[in-house]
Image (cartoon, rainbow, N blue to C red; front, side):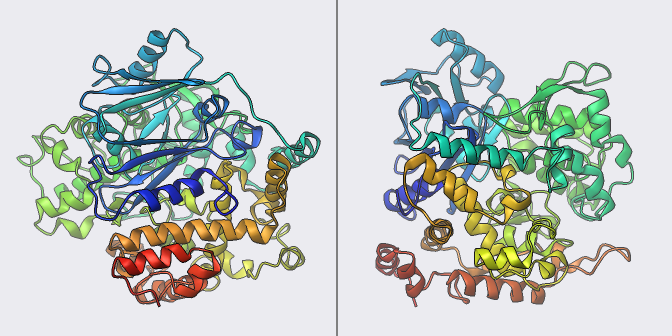
Length: 614
């Protein structure tokens, strides 16, 4: 516990020790781990949960969701749930404080997430319980399926949903009537106020806080387009010319109903309940159009119909699919169609031109149920391009077999480095936020006080290689520490994005321990290196920390900078490996670094599996 704290950290330790390399990810030897941490069930825990397993791609699959399931599990008296084996028939787990049952889910199998949530609560007879579940996509082992809770909050896009489906586990329902003990409540209260004051949108020093507090994260749509950072038409372009039709203001005006948030979130309206009241998508109801949702289902597929984007978000939430995977799959197919690689005969008669939102909506359902051409896309873009052939792999946007998110690779070099080096495949939450803290706050004096060797002026120059590796090393270590507590990455803002002492202090106030800032960052580095050790044991190497061809070779036009070349990327990657203590040629952690992080047992294990630990 001292070395890994909890949540993502403990999950990584369990996975490394108990899941051997090369096992069948969909077989009984793989394990699906749900983890909370010492701050869960307190306001700073934010309801965050880490889900960890071995993905079908062979690398680590880890991701988290918010909502209220995590606190409920903590109040029932549990920090972690580990699922192993494979059930003969569909089932769900019912945790009622000390009573735990495995119940039949044969009558729920095949239902969407909304029906699953309702049916389990009706069966238990308590609509206040919390339920985590998969949809039909997870049941059908569709690539990048999610585990969801609270109808819309998904986690584990890197492979957790299909592993849950392979175990025939439909859901885990929890009721907890206990509580959480705080070692020093008075000190905790002071720190809680200090952290929450940093997120008061009237007085914050982070200019994104007011945007998120009112519009939600989809308020970023217009800014991303204006700065040439919006992946458009499968990232062939970087801005959407009909931005007024799909911006946050339009969503707020036409579809948003009221705010919604996770457990104790200071952003009470970050998410929104929404409804399409007229037009061909009338009757669509759901919640939460995140920034990435809007980017993915408008610009990425060339769509300027916002109602269709809301419909696609709802389809993904109900069917249990990752929105990025669905959008990038459709965008890849659309580009292949327009370039003549795919024809109507391949696509079940669908005209997959960019902007054809009706075809996109139809195709989303086909993917979830593996129907026709949707069955090919259900493999993921990497495998689909291999199956189709004909040069279609030229247009795939994947790293480690996982589709990109919406972070701009060409215009934000630190985002390219962060996504390329993620042990799960692209996942911005592992190093969020991608920008340095407000320079008026993160002064050189503060950096010296914290003992951080960062040149934030260099990092602010987003299209150079200078300072990016140091910044990303700090982001990975510090954000990973936050995900071990846990707390939400949205909370790392303003001064709290660089000064992590309040986070360390609130951990100490909660537990009665005596962590220092240096020890906290060491926890983050230890977990990151352990996760790296897991994937190199599975065969991943430096070559897999890559940049998609399009980002390296295709310029965006005169108004934007040249692409991120392989030479530039290699400069950042060499420095990042050096800072992490990993071998430059292979990305295998060095013996010296493993000893520094008290991971000697990992060094011995890697050697046992034939790896050279230098």
